[in-house]
Length: 87
Image (cartoon, rainbow, N blue to C red; front, side):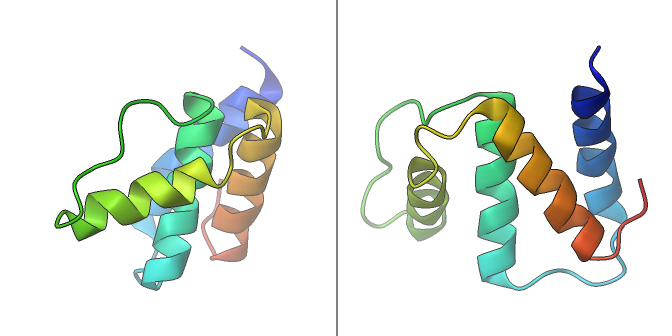
């Protein structure tokens, strides 16, 4: 396993133990970076209009289309660290 992938997985665990829940925009950014870093470009169809949370998550992930998984992992690690999590 690469060092980046290992740090990414540690960040994914560490983010769950933050002392404060990040604001909604930061949560969407975390979600999108995690999905892009673990899965790649957005998959599946856009959720229905009235499923606001799922639609917001889909759109946040969709905006990262074309970003490499490695770059998404680096940005995710940076954001989690900036939020105060220790890896």
